Amino acid sequence: MYLSDSKKLNVSLSINNEERSVVIRPADTLLSVIREQLGLTGSKPGCYNGDCGACTVDINGVPIKSCLMLAVEGVGRKITTIEGLKDTPIQKSFVEHFAFQCGYCTPGFLINCNALIQKHPNAKDDTIEEWLESNICRCTGYKEIEEAIKSVIYPEK
Image (tube, rainbow, N blue to C red; front, side, top):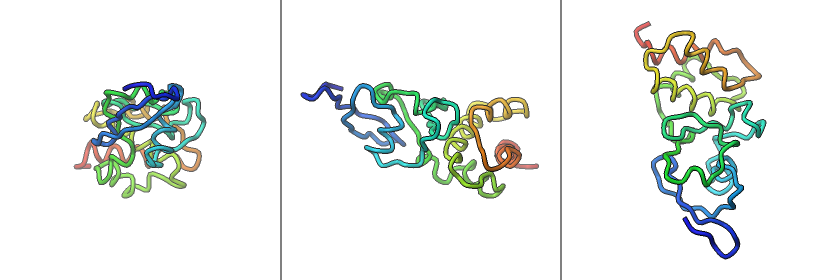
């Protein structure tokens, strides 16, 4: 990482298992860099203050709201966006259980749910409910999302 002549930083970010070089201002959010410079538009801008969760990305196994994180803080960390979850069990389960309506919040939910399953492979209802509190859906209920998670955690049911 180094400062260029125009007070911008040249950095490398590990996004979806690929090293990507970007030139950023120290104040650029991770969300803006992911969308505007890297063209990964799955992470959605919503509230810009961390309430809605539409911009959630996975940072070293932890779901983080990318509107609240500076891009420079992502240097040296493994960042996974919704584009990096292609064909995962949770993504397939969301489709099978109709766990979305308009789809705007879905990328954030998928990232969050995938991290939940990785951290708590046998999560109980209270843990699932607690994790779902970090994201907001305004179109549909959370029942289908819970069913999608449970079908991945407990596939025999």
